[in-house]
Image 1 (spheres, rainbow, N blue to C red):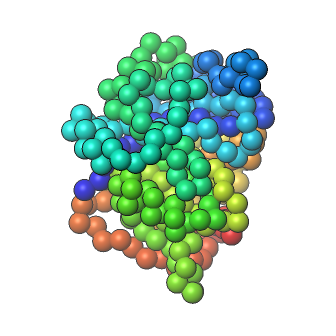
Image 2: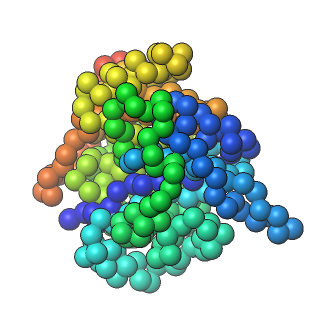
Length: 296
């Protein structure tokens, strides 16, 4: 049984947060907004910017490139939210009081790499977003298919501890593991709903944000998004391809900070009794159709 959660928002760090948000506004058909930022040691508040559209949201404020301030999941029913609160009642909480844009009921945790992962009820997240002008379709979004925030990827030098934390402590379900020839874990895909993964962990020498994925409704929608990137002369740096774990078709571009941003579709829908899969650590696992970005 999954925890019945969906990824709703990423708040990225960036040395140039407005430039980063402008990229998502322009490339992904979103509207730009501004929210209260983080206070520094002198009490000054830096600006935080948001890019929003129905089903997708990216925020950015000052910090180190390729790192996250937090990422937010919503629990989709009150029963799921109550169950999650009970499950995590004794897990140490992270302080997110600096992030004024979070819902009032938000619960936050630090994973073994120090990433801040936030959870809130869907009702609270929905209310938190209501009334935002940014949720109105942007002018360049009128002909674009829907694309809903679906998952993110993190690179980590502590993949065993990270996988255990999300699985055993927070209740994510492992869909697939990727092992090298020595049997060591090199990647792990975990789900929070029936969709194959809401979080992907990749073994790597450093801990950093890897990518986020917006899910298009179908193969035709993905092709439309690819044509849109071509019209913008935005280079597709990986794909079009098909992942092994998840079986989704995809392509990726890079944002101004070098983060990967994905459009995917047709991700596997898992039954509750689906057994965990084991894959070999090789390019073909990450792309059944050709070349792959190997994180280590």
